[in-house]
Length: 201
Ligand code: FES
Image (tube, rainbow, N blue to C red; front, top):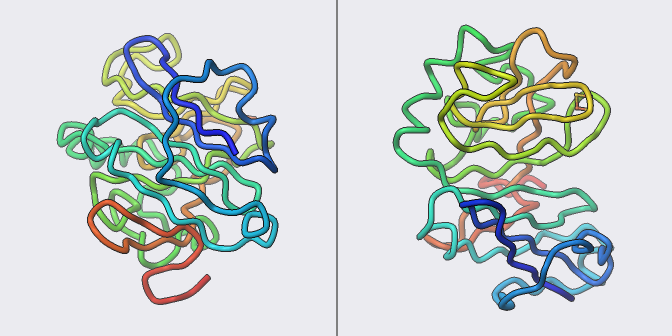
């Protein structure tokens, strides 16, 4: 197992990987280990729920964790109050602002932030176009790809854009919002990915 915490510009990103997906960590400089998340390789292979300690991101908005669940990267990050407040303003520019597509959004997350707690985002990090990994651009400032950027994700493969709730913008190749996995909170700083609040997997 390896847990790698890396720096990227001003932002700190936390990437958690397991031995079975060791390639994920390649290319990142290893700094202090984070030992709070320890799913076994066997549990990972079986697609079992993954326990995650989000204490670090809870104290640092903008920081992102990436954990593996059923072979997929799941992004977990904390949105600032300003980022949360900006989400409704983006609705006119989005394909499915209310998350009506149930394939991408479980019922418990069918709300403006697509989350149980508005500030905590839990999103499957796979572009809904052809499966690339979109980049994280949390800053609320103009970008070369969007002059009115309020933070979100930009897919380098074919320029799809998603907001900080994983909702896809109009006029890009990706047809639908990024998926929200089943998850629930055990307590204030621990969540389980793989089981919805109602127990559904
Ligand atoms: S795979 Fe993301 S835009 Fe094509």
